Length: 276
Length: 253
Image 1: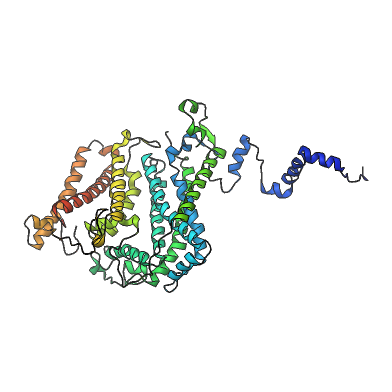
Image 2: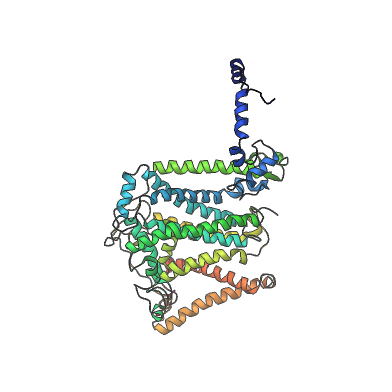
């Protein structure tokens, strides 16, 4: 027993193993029983009810799902898939947006030329910019459709009232994300669209210099709701920097946090709505 | 599509009430994600995002348009002052939307499509969303040209088009020439609109008062009256050349 020499398979035996395919079973066994594999994957892949549950429960990316769901909630006719698509488009803008951030500087002198650089010199720069912009526009549409679907199915009714409120916040932040991003190309389209949009802030009652009752508060064009938003009395380099920070850091963080609440709440409120 | 969705009705009877998310939902999500990403990639390869000339604060384009999703709000600037169209209206939309689940106490239609069990709710939302939001956006994108004038798709966007501003205020149309009396008359009209509207609603729905509650009914009818008021104001402006209902030195509606 102790002096047992390691067995060296004969060539004929080895060729037989290859021919019969036994060798693949053996390799697969070696790999899936290794410490590296078993520490990474906690369960088998065979289609058993137990594994179906574990696929969801033991995976951090999937565990936001319940392990079982009502069959009606699978129907695309019911959900339109719009909430999920909105989230997917958000993720696409995050990925493409981070890539764009490597090349773009939110400074009056550079911003527009960085756009040109992105479009003409950076490999796949134009494609990244296009995907970022179209995903953002598409996200605005899909989030509206999601909201429309949720309304039509009455899914905001008890016990899901609070999640609807979170959803309204998310619609608002989607529009604000898109709006703050609109300025960043620093071209004529961007500057004037944001001028038109932010001009509204100076009509804010009490807090805008042209708004009703402003004279009782004492706000001025350089010190009112609008100047807080754009860092001056017209859309200039300070506005570009403010919108950049809002677009890349502030709003995504808040929207991301609200998304976590929104998704978690679906589970806590009893899953996707359906006839009781 | 899942088997549950694709199978004819008879077969669904055989599908259990509850299904495993893996694979039935996860595979759907995966397919859906594939389709969306491919569509986005193809769209992005085919159509380039716009980039105009560098920003120039001394060169105002005509028309200057907000991003397309705000063009509904920009369009009601024709009918309302900026404090309402640009600040109060958006806030009311957001707050009004958030209030929906607390104002709509109809227990029916929770989690399924139905028109018959909640006709009013469906009508109000569809009108607000499809007409006041989407239709105005489409109009703002395609039909508003230089000077924010209306142009049909086949018309040339003439930057020198002059449209005579002949609109008058409601009190003026009723013969009031004095500022104070104009303001009192205009304010009276507004008060009457909201007062009578609220009163009529409470009278017609008096049986519901106990179950629905005063605050709910009050907020509901105020929001509805404001929404209808926007439509009335648009009709008054286009049909009868009325600019303001009420004019005061501080605020005009």
